[in-house]
Image 1 (cartoon, helix red, strand yellow):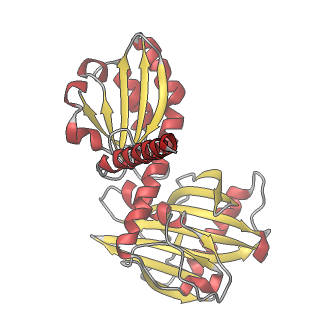
Image 2: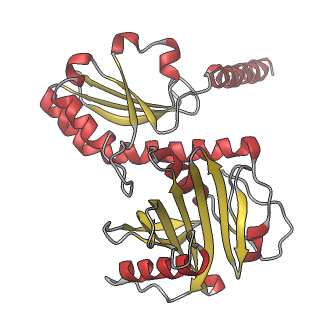
Length: 333
């Protein structure tokens, strides 16, 4: 019995220590879409730095001018201590006798992702960057989506209008319904010198073919919706897909259902007004329809990467619910 008690006390002590260790990690910090790059100055200014910038500062798809995928804050390893270590997304790149490539969670703060790339030579280190950058970028982006969605909870929009379509979206309370007509919803946020917008509507289930003609079908759908529901200042003006800018189209998934993701530029017909959009056509077979979600921004002479990222984060909170359900709208996970 004495030995059993000792074992129990030891187990309790170890468990308490483990809990204590988890609690001592500070909260991670950093702006959305920002990464701390830990690499010495010589590597950063040479071919290794060029390779890192090629991937992590690549232009974002669907914006009117080049904006980097991430804002990179380069830090020399000697100053990577204390508060500097608490950045949410960290990439450590260095010359080392052993090869290392991986991502560790919550090393110095929580939540945090630390990607580590090491190799014996510069050439091998560049190979490591080229090989692992897509995976690291994907993980960093998912972290930033989750962080953005978590920030919505500080002041969550509690309106339930979208339940009429059998869905919910989590977004900040600053977003307001601007138009509601025939199962078409236009949600708007006023920003400095412009607006951020979300459109939600339904289409017949088979109205977008799953073949090479789907791009034209999506453009036709958007232009028709724009003509009907998104007018310009005068008659004959309405939102269309910009003809001079070929949209990017990807297979995707939203709320566990197949989707088509389209990123491109919108414009107002017969008027000088334009901006970026992201559009999801979601295959909602249980309800015999396509559900269309779109975010677009009007912010002239302003960088739009983070605006569009917030809209994407909102659209990716999509949840399907029973129409008429009185339960509270689901929040971002």
